[in-house]
Image (cartoon, rainbow, N blue to C red):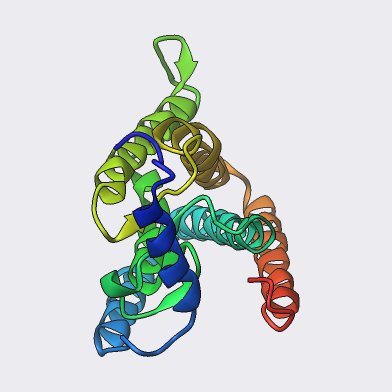
Length: 214
């Protein structure tokens, strides 16, 4: 499934997703297990190893992800449908219309793929800086997997003009570019970028959730 089909079934599934945002009807203990695995199994060991570049790369990607999810929910509010929805049957908890707890936990650690980058940040691959090549490669992998997700009941694309190509170019490439470029940045820049990004995300959610927009 390369594009949304605009079908009645897709729109009905999207409506169900909208109605289930922050509902605890499907809540279960996997919520706690996933959170513990991410914090104790990933972040704490990386912090203990003082892998600060990896930690900031992960926080950068996760922060950009949340900004996109907020914008996706805003689009849903003003146009009727988001660019992507997650189905309530597939998750223990939908946080915003396009992101569930399980998906969020995955994105919280996706930025650690920066640890696979070549040590030489100036090395070129086919004449292109390796950070850009790796960002495009990672984005392509995620976008291809999203094709599979969109073919299942778990993930919903409604708009016919939204699909693999715009997801790849406008969503995943920025995710991984932010992550991989922050990985190489000086520590003050890493701290400033993540602090500002997460402050923007927090302010948007604090304002928009009570207003019923997201």
